[in-house]
Image (spheres, rainbow, N blue to C red):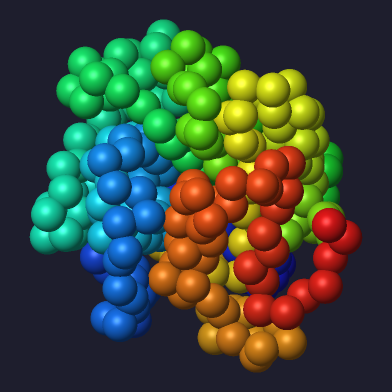
Length: 282
């Protein structure tokens, strides 16, 4: 049986899952004070309907950014994210799309640019996984879907977005602790997350001369809709980490704020590890 502590994770775009969680994830701390770190910036966030993606959207809004979030099917969750962003006084554009398809990636970008006229921050965050204890149980259909969602979409959306990014703009990719230590339950998924690390580091070198920074975040066990939607027993989720608990989305999103802001102006090709104290290779 798959162990829930293996799964950190991001939005799987599961319809209405966020509202059914008990307890609800903490999206943003009540005492988090914005300071216009991202004022007048436009951010495109994939997998932005719930979990880490929602938290990123709300934190960015509190820092003064307008956002566009991309989601697969969870309409109610996406609308809730928009409400939370709008409470921060910022705009939130909802774009429903299947990022496995290149034509839909193109539509996403066109919709964002048509609405806002610019793009400054690309957050590649959407991901899926299909837990299997044996590689022989991983179907090629699921393998293909995992790679098309978790790395193909990152690559293609980045490729077409570069025409709109300029000096000082940023790309932030979501990887996972599984990219660094592996996972016997997530061979295909962990492989895509490792690819994201190499993609991030390679692209950062290519874009350095344009001063477009490319970084990433590698979460550990985070309390998101993917966890209760995937496992029957979540009583020990995250408890094997040194801090003895799972993390909250509110503890992850500030890293994206940092990497997207001028505070990280001399950082590119790097990953921030938010995993409750698990030591992994950089």
